[in-house]
Length: 453
Image (cartoon, rainbow, N blue to C red; front, side, top):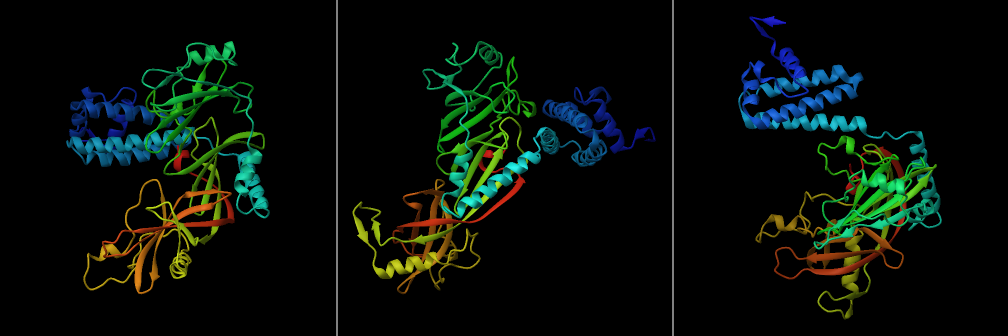
């Protein structure tokens, strides 16, 4: 439709955009101030071309949503045009739209759990619940152990260089067939992280008779990270999982990572209902979440088993002095006060809306009384609460190591105490406890932690 020789802005702009999708805007036809601004700026022009390609790809992959996508594009054009000639504003609008289109594109490629996946999730839930009646502490670990599959595999290490990095071997490793070696060399295999020591494992992850590739890289760092990628074997080559959705040739396509400091994460390769999953466990105080990851697909909707725990916490009478390894005994009064404080913890709490200890008429300020303070990244703060010893109120914080638990000690935690408004050094006490499963639930949704992708 035309008015005085000009097309209606939204309709004309959408048409103009659709005509230029493959190679960016046709600047010879640029008419509006916005179009001229895009053509005059190299960065904006490249963003326009990228977005055009993303829009075209999404339209082709989701024909049932064509009307919806066109409607969203018209609304975006209207918002973009409000920037007029403001390059910074246009840059932001384009990047927001490009990110949205790329997210929608990845969603069209992502694996959707089917009935077999649901049955596998329910099977694990029921087995954990049954095991918890016999062993309420380790039912999850024993169930995952029972389903852990012994993969028929060939493993080999990368070749280290002088910079302590590893590279793909140049000679065929033992156990690798000639056909597999040709396919590996045709596939530009890289590590699962830019830096670190890498190992490679050939094994069949989808039951098609061809071995796939698991690539694990230890990159260290503050979190002591391990990254894992998978590559699907097709016979003539290996294809990296998620490569079809990557915005750049070497974009990260990690299936999962584990953080050995600052988290409590582990992976079991399990086989349930004849399917292999990477059962990724992400722990915290009072809860373990297990995500059943399809090892060769993009995982956005993930079968999830959530195991919740209750604890019987105790403050041992015998403590180790924080400045001296010599053990010492708590007085009955202090031990009783600490245990009483712990009994007030119901769950992990958010920031307190009321002061934990009474605020005196004079002192360092109100903020000193509402929380214990900052925590170190490698520990998990559980809750802040008051502990009363004699006439003194202390702000206490229970901390633990993200639910880490073992058979001998159980839950290992610490109780830190400080007196608000005082220069006195904070005190810490050992806390331990035994756990029991209180609930096992299932759901399908986004994975979190190192399994988010």
